[in-house]
Every structure is written in C-alpha cells, then in structure tokens.
Amino acid sequence: MSRIRDVKLEIHGHGSGMAAGRNVQYTVPHAIASIETLRAEDGKSSSSSNSSRVVVVVVVVVVEVVAVVVVVVVVSLVVVVVVVVVVVVGVVVVGVVVVIVVALVVGVVVVVVVVVVVVVVVVVVVVVVVVVVVVVVVVVAVVGAGAAAMVVVLIVVVVGIIIVVVVVVVVVVVVVVVVVVVVVVVVVVVVVVVVVVPLPPFSKTSCS
Image (cartoon, rainbow, N blue to C red; front, side):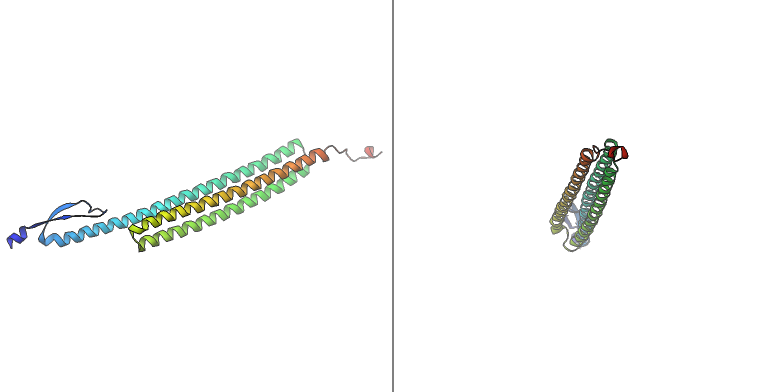
C-alpha cells in the first residue's frame, strides 16, 4: 500500500483553457479529483470566451449604429444649411415675398423628409441590433464555442452589409432631395428676377 501511495501521476492539460500546458504531479488518491478540476476550469474558460465574443459583436454593432446616426445627422445639417442659405440669398438679392414663401415651403418639406428618413433608419438599426444580439446569445448558448465563432463572424458581416446599404440609401435619398430643393429654388429665383422684377409697377401714372 505504501508503494501505491507513493506512485505519482503526471497530468497534462489539453485545450485552449486555463488548464492548457499545465504539467502537475498528483498522487493516486488525488488524480480523479484533479482531472475534474481541470475540466471545470476548461469549462469556465469556454464560457468566458463565449461571453467575450458576444461583447465584441455588440460593440461592433453599436459602433456601426453610431456611424449611421452621425452620417444621417451630418447630411441633415447640410440640407438645413443649404435651405437657409438659399432663403437668405433670395431675400437679399431679390427681395420678393414669393421667393421667401417657396423657399420656406420647400425647406419644411425637406426637413420633414429628413426627419422621416432618420426615424426609419433608427428603427431599422435598432431592430437589427436586437435580432443580432438575440441570435448571438442563442447560438453561443446552444452550439458552443467552436461552431459559434464562424456564425458570429457571419452575423457581424451580414449586419455590416445591411447597415452600409441603409447608409447608402439614406445618403442617396437626402442628396436627391437637396438637389431637387436647390433646382426648384434656383428656378423660382431666376423666374422672379427675369420676369417679375422687370415689370413696371401698376399705378395711375403708368396707366395714363
């Protein structure tokens, strides 16, 4: 019995967890308990790895959402500035009420369109983020660390493509609206300057 107690086992931990590469000598009575301890440590490490993947995906999605919101806000500000500049230039150069009214109406329409686009983009992005987070959590919980890694990468790529497409659509829509606004206001200003301003005032002197 004394010889059996003196026998020592060398246990080498395999895998990617905390037990990897660990060479420790154990006596026979402690061998089974030590193996179970190493397995438990590997399980904790896998769980931590899954949690880190979820955190990375959430961070990437949040960064992409912030980028979308920033682009939409910047484009909206550009639209508002263009409308204000057109109104001011029309008032200073022409000084006609028609130019002011048309510019203000078109400006209101542009602002409404931009607000609707921003709301739609925010709703779409929020829905995509919620779906992605739920899918990642479910996949990591059910599939595990191995296959979940590729699934997480694919999900992040798909989400990135969706957000890029949304941003491109938003930018195209806003640019088209801005071009239409500028063209309409310029046409109105030209018509007023060329047609309305040169007309002689209607008065008794001019009629006689």
